[in-house]
Length: 396
Image (cartoon, rainbow, N blue to C red; front, side, top):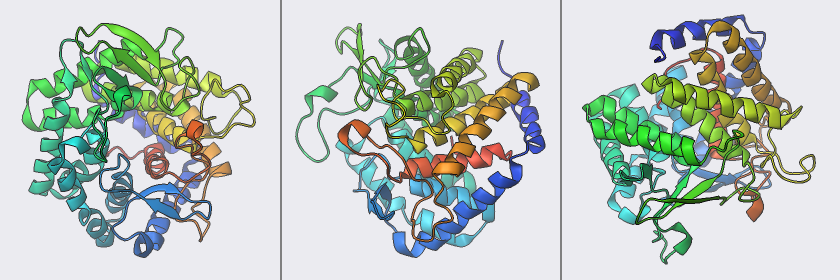
């Protein structure tokens, strides 16, 4: 049985009855005010990770996170109609042209990079060049699909910065790619080409089979034999251990499968989002913000990851909109709890010195990058707040 699109929009009407509506609206308005405040400081640069003094360090030209500040600007434009947000977002287009000029700069993150920049611009303004760039990016992402094994190759062995990274040779998939499938789904809607949808659905099914464990926890990465396509083993790149459950990875999957279900109507994807969300909810216990990896030995003293909480909250609200009212109430309550945890312990929107929206993000905790502002945490925080308030127009 397919999920009917109307059920999503009918369920969204339930948001007005929840007690946190005013608090979320005020937080969203502070996010917009913060973007206005920091615009002269950030300029055309793109935040990468926060520094200890709550200022930003910035991306190089091909960084995977280069689009998340642009995504916030496009959301702000949608909410306000303020042309200053339009100008700041559109002025970043040269960055995305450059990505398409350099083959070694292109990997599975094309979905992140172009959904939150060129697709957003096309949807909000109808700009033809933005559409053309996004379709070219989708075609490049499609080239990474391995049809025999039905997966999208994650990274490149050859780095854009020089050198060969043997651990990134063909055969590796990662949970993050579930968020990049939206670019393929959008390209399918724009062109009618079935190969875009075939690749997106094939990768989602392979991810569900091999990266989601029987107990509904998840691997970060999985290796296949690049010649035969034979599945080999699950590993981690950013999590605590190969057999652990990295919280941001679990969040990518929740949002990704909920979004795929909303896009395709496939109930198997909705069930995957449901099971992954229920597992994350159980693993969090009483925490308001997820620990960076649910399997760390001393979870109470381990770094939190506000980005995992924000991504998961946004995905939970998508899932809620796919469910019948009784179940939807459960997911709305969990989404509200996640936003509440972020507002109680991570909210920087009222701090005039902070250039970002959320504290306590864990970019790569095992490598020492934790307790920092993160632009993707900030983007999904805005998205989660908007979804909690009933907004339904996004760029995925």
